[in-house]
Image 1: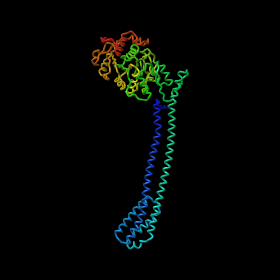
Image 2 (image 1 turned 90 degrees about the horizontal axis):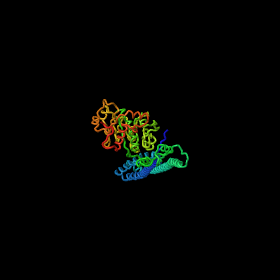
Image 3 (image 1 turned 60 degrees about the horizontal axis):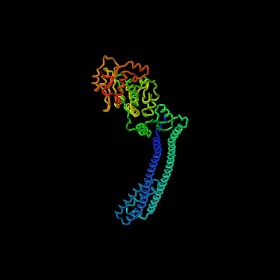
Image 4 (image 1 turned 45 degrees about the vertical axis):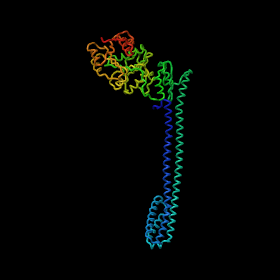
Length: 520
């Protein structure tokens, strides 16, 4: 199972901050919901208690008013008093029905219904005068007082229940707060360990460098971003520093852009714009076998050795590369390839995956693989390479994929290499257009017989520009390059002179008014 670990201490701190705040946020949300529920419950219960108490008191008052109104009616016999009595009786019935819904378990309701039926029969004047001093009025008042006592008792019970709910909620909040405090403390301790532990590991390894102690070969457990500055720039040193936990190394003289990119990556800050400074030169052949790999390899060697450029040679034919043979080297592709780790491509990984040929030439190639990168990934990887090398020469095998066509649009220089064939004429007539600052060089190669060659003037007319150079065919130079391991550019031949002139053309140092390997 792959461990998911942040790459910088800043990311650990931010992750710890978020994870510690998450339970605190959950506790705040829980407490706010509980207090909101308690507030609503308290408000409802208080409103209900006030309504019930007022209604019970109003029923008692209404019973006394009913008794007084009936006695006045019995004495005066006024029909208007009878109408008031009927309204008061209807109002009492309405209040009693509402109160019964709120306080349903009072025993006085049955007796009150019986007395209400008796009061309905007193609307006759003669009967009202007979019952004006009846003891039923006393019983009626006592029943209302009893109902009022029951109501107050029910209100007290509701208040007691509310107090119990408050106590239960307080206990729940204490438990939740204790759990969240314990969890937050554990998270704080965990992230404190995650921050301090790798720092101590790196500290012990740094101390071992000058103490003659064999450094710990185990990888640093946790985020470790250690950047060293030094004077040596060889691959063996890079690999040893990686083995002891160093993440990046910058040899003198310092490259400010590369150092800035490394420090931004250390802080976890994504680069908004590329720091690309090196020129990207794409070499594209009009067909297979026109000498694209030969031109790329010898141009790279010439620029590195004679023009003192930091050159990276990138072969995008990952299935079979001819560059090691052309440069007199053995096939030894690195175990980890640049195209397998484009998401973490930097100076350290480039130094680890490059096949170094001399102090200024770095070859990137593979065997038996297939390029599966998308257009954005490929362009981004090339931009990163251009941040670390002054010149990046790319051997483009074909233009069948969208990624290779997109890469061609981003190149600074595109060299179109052809063999004066009809197929080359057809391809050059449909050249993809790059940016306004992109430079195109048309280079012909006499690698086929004179018969059937398309005239150079016709190719220039279709392409819309003159030839920058024409390479003569030199079979002996190819044989010596493959059998003796001597790069073609190091031999004394017309082909070597033509490629040297093309390299000078690229850097702007060729003699004015002269063209090596001319058309005529």
